[in-house]
Figure: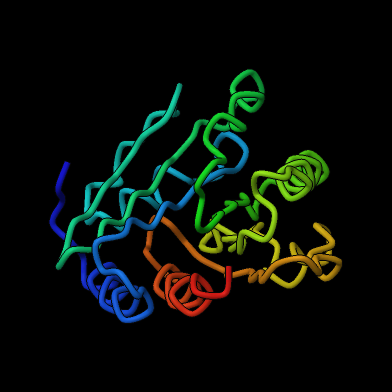
Length: 189
C-alpha cells in the first residue's frame, strides 16, 4: 500500500536515497517491543495517520512507502508473550531493528531487557543496527532514556551500531531524531 508521507518520513527517504547505491532497493525495518510499548502508535505517526484509537496488534502490520524508487517497509509485529516466539520469522533481510520500550512501565524493564538481548543474540540479526525508542516520555512516571539505557545494559553492545532515543509516539516528539540516526547508520550494516 502506498501512503502519504509526513515531512519527517520524506526527509528520511531523501537521506536514505542518497545513501543507497541502487535507489530501487528496499529498506526493511523491523519494529519490535513488548505489548503496549507503542510500536503501532509510532508507525501510524510516521505515516501521518490518526493515533487517537490504537488497538493491540494481534499479528503484524506493514506500512510500505514508495518514493523516487525507494521503498521503505516497516514491519510492526505484536509484542504479546504468545506472539514473541514468532518474531524470528521476520528477522531475515532486516536492515534496521527498532526496539520500542514503554518508559513508564518500570515493572517490565527486566522482561523487555531479556527480549532485547534475545533479539541481539540471534544470528539472523547479527550486525543489524538497533534503535531503541524510549517511548511515552510524555508521561509523568517515564524513566529518562539514559536510565533505560543503563537498565538495558545498552553500553555492553559492541557488535553493531545502537542508539537510544527518547520519544513520545502520541506527540510525535523524538521520532525524527531517531530516523536521522537510522539514515546515518543504515550504510554501516
